[in-house]
Length: 156
Length: 332
Image (cartoon, rainbow over all chains, first blue to last red; front, side):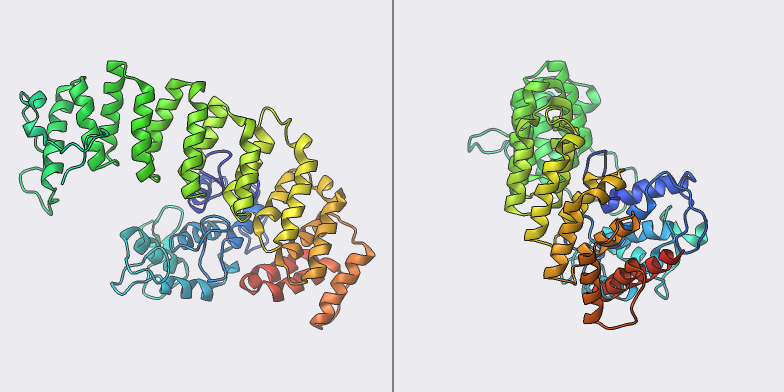
C-alpha cells in the first residue's frame, strides 16, 4: 500500500495479517535478505524502510499492536506485526516492556487470552497468538519460535 | 427452535422429516466413523436438516426442493461452504433468478457481515449479473459500512465492484462523507487513495495531486494527531521524493503544526523525512527547531536532522529505540 504495509489484495487497506503473510511468503522464498540490526547490505523487492515505519507505528499508546491505523490494539497483532519485525531484524526497535504489559492485560481469569484487554472471554486463536507473541518477546518458559513458519525453532 | 427457510411470513418452521416434498428422501447421517471421539451434540433441527442435505448432495440432485433445503442449512450455519457451493451448483442448473438470490444473500450478510462465504457468494452473483449490479452492490456496502465503517469485507467487495463493474462517479464524495463523520477512519483514507489513483474519470494521481494536497493539509491542521492524513500526504508523492520536497505547502504545514505544538510526532517525523530527502531548511524552520531544543536543553546539534531525531526520542518514547537507531544512520 502507499503507506508501507500490505493489504489483502492490491488497493486494500494495509493490514497486520496481510502484511505478515506477504512478508513471510517473500521471506520464505528468499527475496528478503535484510537485517536492520546489522549494517549489512539489504536486498528486498519491497520498500523496507516504509514497511518498518508502518510496523512500528502500529504499536499504540497502550503498548499493544493494532492491525490497522487508528484501530484498537488486539492481542494477535503482537504476533503478526512482531513477526514481520523479527523477519527484517528490527524486533529490537519496539517497546518490549509496554507490549508485554499489554499482553498480560489480555489474559483472562480462565488462563486463555482474549482479543482486547479486560475482556472476560478468551478464545483459542488469541490464546495461541498471545503466547506466540510472548515467545517473540523472549518470555521465559516459552519456546523460541520460527515466526515465518509458525512453528517452534526446535522443530526446524 | 429452527429458523425460517428465508420466507417473509411468520410461518412455523416445518422440519424436513415432516415436509411432503421430501417424503421420498432417505436422510444420510454424518459419517463419524466407528468410534467417534468428542462428538458434537448437534441440536435436533440442525441434525435433521444436515442429514437431508447430505442425502440430496450425495445424490447430486439439482431441484427447487434442494435449493430450499440449502436455505435452511445456511440459516443454521452460514459458514458451511459446502452448502454454499452446492447452492451455487443448483442455482446454475435451475437458471435461477439471480436478483432474487442476491436479495437472499443480502439478508444473511446483514446479520453476518464478517462471514467469508457470504461475501464470496455475493461476488459470484454480482459477477454473473454484471454492471447492472454495480449500483445495488454499492448501496449494500454503504449500508454495511454505516454499521461498521471499517468492515474489511465490505471495503474489499466495494473495491472489487468499482474495478469490475464500475460506479466510480460518487466515490470521492462518499469518501468525503465518511471522513466528515470520522476523519480518523483510515479505511476511508485508503479508499480515497484508490479513487484518486485508479478512478477512470478523475485523470489519475498527477491530475488530482494538487487538490488532494490541499484537502489533506486541511485535515492535518484540524487534527494534527491523526496519523492517517500524514501518511496519505506521503502517499500522494509516492516514488517522487523530489516533488515532495519541492512542494512548499508541505514543509509549511509541518512548521505550522510544530509552532502550535512542538511535540507533534507526525510533524517531526515528516520533517525528518523531508530533510533526509534533501529539504533545505528555511531560517524559520531552523529557528523553530532551535526553540524546541531550548525547551529541553541538551548540547546543540549542528545537523538539524540529528536535532529532530533527538527531539523525537523525547516526544515519542514508545519508539525511542527506533529514533536512536535512526540517529545512528544519519551520521553514516
